[in-house]
Length: 401
Length: 222
Image (cartoon, rainbow over all chains, first blue to last red):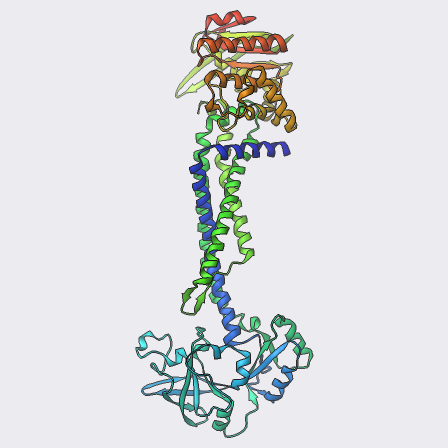
């Protein structure tokens, strides 16, 4: 067995080294491109998913979210809970949010949208919305009569360019009217417009906690959710366990648990596209290698006949062609890996601009290994069958060429 | 003692709708250490006979006994192993592996027998020295003349010290000087090593090298 493999390897390396270089190099190049193709789309998808995850943490949920237990609408004694959470090891900071139904009006444009409420000082420590100001400024604790709006809410003058219903291109300094569900109507000056490129966040509006207390006309110690930022380097699931061990009775979820269902459909659709591309790439690889090895074996038909005649077992001959395709495959994969790394570097400098944000390539080593294994299996299949066809031929027929 | 015994050997090929009777009941015996020439006109069945007794092809009917072994009982795999261990081949058109150097072409066979690399190298260098190609070890077949390539083929046939060497018109593509050198080489191998050699030839002047000639005509031995 070892002797057979040794001879197969011996024949394969010599044939590869001394036969047509152009043909071999072209095949290696094709395999490198196939491997790149197999990885590229999945890494774009990986980058998109990574972007969605990052946006979820930075602008939407933070690391951990606390929601009211069961069917309750609000978390009571919200300030007490925030103070308690802030004392838990592994927690960097917590920020409570409240929400109130409203309609926003600017000139003839009116949209129904809940107004989110936060303490701007807490929010700065929990999300990164304040870093994404398109224009104007972020809210402060003392702000009253001012509102912060997302880019999709602001919209465009030409509303055909808008994804959602908007206020028709309002800018910082413009006034809008907010009609709350409790019947209170307020005139707000737009303090700033933020643009995170996360479609959920950019379709939100915020006012300060002080402002909503004026609207409600009483102090507010309730919240609909509490966002929790964990210390860098800590694991959210461990911090969640600690929080629960500290006796927090509300519904505590990590961002992954909370967002799990949020992107499932998108990820599933991405995976279907990716699997189709993967399958097509593999078929291309098999067909190319099959043709190359078929031409090679037909060209070497006489040589195969002679090898059999002088006593070389046909399995050794078949193996030698499989080894050749494996070598071509391995070299192609290595070159493909280098191409991928170059692309990763390029797209980290010049990310792909999608409406939801700038996407860099995110290459998962698992997918890379899986693709390499699939491609090597394709090489074995593509090397085996054409070689078997000729090697099983009767000696004299093969020797006639 | 006979190393090859053939009885009532028939080989019929089907060419379209026509049956071609290449061998029509050949019966021969070849003794150990004999240098036998198989001669006859073109199309007489010389090569077909050689292919049968060298186990490259199977007869339509008849009996072939090689070293007391019924060749008909061997599977394809066993025949391949048998050829590797007991036979050496020299073909008309050299039949070297074009991607292997002189030394690699020769050492491939001891390698296939599972001999260590060092032994394979030593054996091939030694045998290439015998055929006068010690200086051409790293040359590829395309870098050698026809005579040199045929000597490499002879070295390859000899390297495993087979019991029988089969040569199918080894001098057909060579000039008279190279033909003479090759025939003398075969004679030398036969005399020094006592190996049985079965060679096809259609040149009458080659007869002087053979111990015996088997003449084939219309698929029968005369």
